[in-house]
Structure formats: structure tokens, C-alpha cells
Length: 124
Image: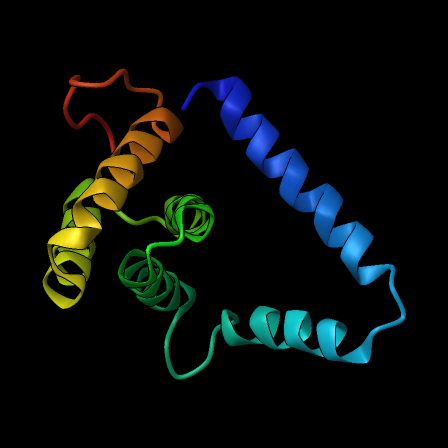
């Protein structure tokens, strides 16, 4: 995913969230608010919650969710070693059908970290 694609993903998500939340629909608004509240610090810190969200997204095979949680995990300070442990949990729980989504998750991670495919880990 190029920087343009990362920007497009972020802009699309923000634009559509604004559009959706502009509707007078309490069910949708409450669900979005519940999602926001879920990822706030509590008994678990934000980093742990985002890693859990990433595992769930891998198992459910939602590429948009995977990209979102990879970005949130980076923001929360998840290291490459931690990412690959998270990926391994998602793979074990979800099985081999997760592999294509794992590939896209690692590609998105590399792009977010400013790496080209095949560069290997650099930085945090």
C-alpha cells in the first residue's frame, strides 16, 4: 500500500464516518460511541486493546479493520516483534485462511513504517 493508499484509506474512513454520524440514527451513533469507549484505557491499556482488536480483525478477515488496528498499534508503540506475536495468535486462532490477510497486514505495517516490501524490520 503506497502512501497515497494510506492517505486515501484514512481520508475515506474519516469522510464516511462523518457522513454516517450526521444521520439521526441513535443505534449507529451508540455503536460508534461504544467502539470508541472500548479502546480507551481501563483495566487493559490501549496498546493491549489494540493488539486484541488486531487479532480479532485477522480472525474475522476484515482488511479495513486490520489496516485500522495496525495503524492504531503503531501509534500505541507496538514493536515489530510484538506485531509478529499478535500475527501468530491470529493465525493460530483463525487458521490458514488468515494467511492472505496476514500478508496484507505485514504489507500495510511495512508501508506505515516506511519500508519497501522485502526490506525486513527496521526501527521500532
